[in-house]
Image (cartoon, each protein chain N blue to C red):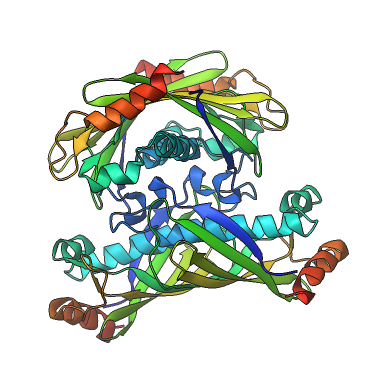
Length: 138
Length: 138
Length: 138
Length: 138
């Protein structure tokens, strides 16, 4: 499976007075793409939470290369970089298809926790399997 | 008790490309002021949720009169306008003390619900009492 | 022309601890739909700003009827309700097609200003024409 | 000069359905603290933009260690880690004074650009001097 590609359009309220999509909003773009990847892999994130397991972000590394602007359509590619015992690392690339400009790249590590207690827990086997299928194919 | 006054400072990420504090963020400013009023009245909102009751917003009316900008310090005044059987209406004024400009006004009606079921419920007596004390004094 | 319908999906970062799409984010949903309507009517908002004219929000009235949740796909219908000499009023309905639940309704009045000075100005004739075409058909 | 310490309080709208302050909002907390540091060092960021120079974020590394929750008061410490020819790197620590829990750490590299063209430019001498004074003392 190739990296999952997800399209987002920059909202007006996401711009800042520099005229750029504000850097904090990229985390929402990455999250939306990651959510779409998980749904496509057969394990929607909402289902995971319904089973009492959450995936809060533990580490985030972002590299901003060119500004995105209002109404820009961005292609967010996301893939599974590593599946640990109680964590998943996703890789991301953001491009602007209209002119081929590379906008940003990122990695994000999510921990697997029990929602009730907040304690780390092993990734469920079926999530691991669906993610590794995704990963293997990259 | 006079209307509760709360100060907020406009964040860079809250501006938009027009150079104004984006209108959606005013709802966060109003919410922060309302939260401070409730804490000051002796009934912090967090405590209410711990008892299984939530106050989602049901109606919001905002009137934007002059733009606020990055690093503006805004004074948000908030008061209880009406306490219904299962709702509270707050009134708000936003000013910029530095130059006395009136920035915005608003009213917001919150419903009282049971968090577990989402069903409307009567306001708890102690919340009603603490709000009416606040209201009476306005 | 029927009201313009625009689909959005609730992001995780847009939920709050009540498990609802936080009420402030609805303004971003309405804005995204309005932006799409303007683009469809032949006058993209970005072009207007490139000509030195902005449309800041002056009044907003929102009525929240049922909560939206993470990953809900919402249909935001938007139409032109009134075109004034230096203002436009948009009407909105938000529904959740999956179960037909009516989520929210709103109106929003935008003022027409010169971006350089912030002073009110008449709506440009071509914008007025494109909006009235849209309005007439509702 | 010791690292600048800035206090923020988690807003309701900044929580997510996990009950945590959503990870994207940390960037706004860091930005608010950085803005306060710059103002304290004698070079408010707004003044820099008024002179035609912007400091967009180029790299961000965040490490989330414990969740923050609604109404938590967080202490954000920020300092200058490195001043380059056309960039500044800030370091950050976020703690929760109420219970001494370490919430997050981060570094962020900002590039110096001309706002009009978006082209990289040398940091102005007076900004460099005020930042190095801050840095030297850490």
